Amino acid sequence: MSDVDRAPGLNPNVPSSARIYDYMLGGKDNYDIDREIAHRMLAIAPDTKTLAWFIRQFLVKAVRLAADAGVRQFIDLGAGIPTSPNVHETAREIEPSASVVYIDNDPIVHAHCDALLAHSPGVTALKADIRQPDDIIDRLKTGSLIDFNEPVALLIIGVLHYVMDDEDPYGIVAKFRDLLAPGSYLAITHGSNDTHPDFINQSHDDTNNSPSQVKYRSREETAAFFDGFDLIEPGVAPAQEWLDDDLPATRLVIYGGLGRKAG
Image (cartoon, rainbow, N blue to C red):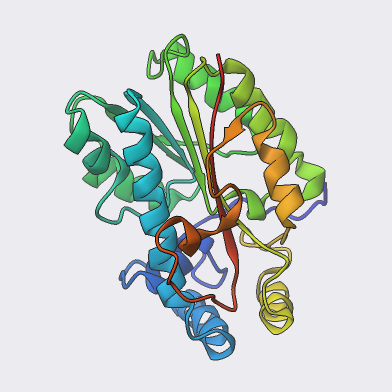
């Protein structure tokens, strides 16, 4: 791993993936640097704002599918700045007692989650880094936040493409997978190397050596995160294909995938 510190902070001159995504969704919790990068992205792929909503709707669909299947515990790894409908709002439409843990390493995200989401029983916000899975798992266990003897929905939406190869993204997912009870679900979205080359090059220029540095991966590389899970149709596919057959392709390609851990 490089010596560059990629942990996010409060520096308004360093881009944040959470704040860029917030801007794409129409939020106001972003800085000039985030908007500048978003505008460069939109100049190449004007449909990226639409894609941001496709991704959000994929998350909502994954939560509903898991809740309908009886899952009552949700871990949102890399939760991002709160946007309604949130995971707990969606899950509790189906099961009012559902518990949710929102986890993010961005201090702005944590502050928002803590202020807006964590004042209801069964909803918790943790400031933690996905690249330190042992720390997260220990805190989930010692705080009795998650009962790993019961099914859990693990949501990793738009996060793993910010974990570089030398930070062991597959090992991170495997540590959680090995704890999950049968009947648990894993939902992932991930940037695809089928994305338009101009977009990939621009994003690399804008984010290299920052907390938002991106690693685009292939469909096969993304599917490998689901080792130990049975993939649900349509498998690893562009996020909009999970929502409707008629939704348009986008220049930025983000895969969505949902799997269930067999008993």
